[in-house]
Length: 340
Ligand SMILES: Nc1ncnc2c1ncn2[C@@H]1O[C@H](COP(=O)(O)OP(=O)(O)O)[C@@H](O)[C@H]1O
Ligand SMILES: [Mg+2]
Image 1 (cartoon, helix red, strand yellow):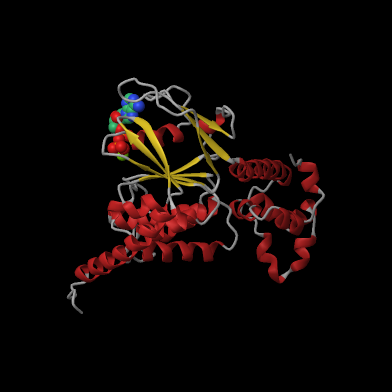
Image 2 (cartoon, rainbow, N blue to C red; image 1 turned 90 degrees about the vertical axis):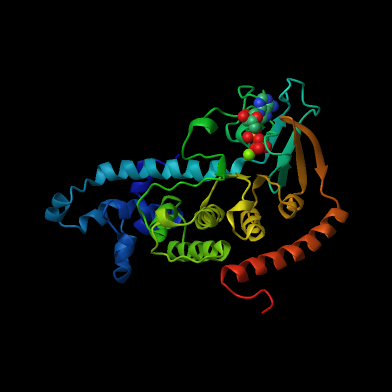
């Protein structure tokens, strides 16, 4: 915990350097010491010194109360540190067995998934793939229809994983993305980047929009309203956004294949970082990209199969076929001949 008193004695520059995310705190409060680039001496002032540069009348006019702001700043820094830190602390998820749809116990002792693992979940429609993702998202404690229990780091999790909004265990990418906010694509991503305290924000925002465009196949402009994106475009936007801005240590993906996006590239983007990725899929390319695949039958985990070298060699054939298919699809869409 950092106290207001400790912040009081530091220069503005030190505060900004130690806690880059405080830039947004200053900006949101209408004080932008960063803008003093042309007057670097301001940055070397301490809290009181900095406020002394704003004359009384203006301080009054803008209702700036240095003492109150300092307390708020300390609170903000502590919350952010807790939030940024907690996301990194997960190193494993453990699934403890429950029962299948007939009430029979699942035939495994425990299933451990570690950071960096990519796990696919396969099985017929209605077999319980989404249910398994749901159990993980909800950090089940024998209180879901399957009776499964999820441990975090080998331990029963702190209940706050369930309820805290900021400290999010899971980024969920599901079949339906319904935007209700009246924002353009750029505004939406900017808002998110801002709340995530990323450095070089403008660059990240551009990158996310460019990646989303390359995933989507049908391009869209940064100024497009998010409510008017097609299903595939909004999916692509959420994937790019999650890949670059999510601090969640676990990513759950529920059948992204039907969204008309470059799903292999999407998955590559998402697994670039050290996270736990679980994805339900019917797509052989995606299924084989997992290190292991969980086979679900009648609501229960029936098997866990390690992806073998032989299977991986099939994967490269599949990818080749997939690229051909994708290029034909693109040509058809763009009204070209397949023979061109
Ligand atoms: N072990 C289980 N016990 C009871 N109900 C289950 C179990 N597994 C899945 N279900 C239920 O079966 C239905 C279909 O499961 P779902 O996860 O949507 O299938 P999928 O995603 O594979 O198509 C859901 O209503 C789900 O809650
Ligand atoms: Mg499903």
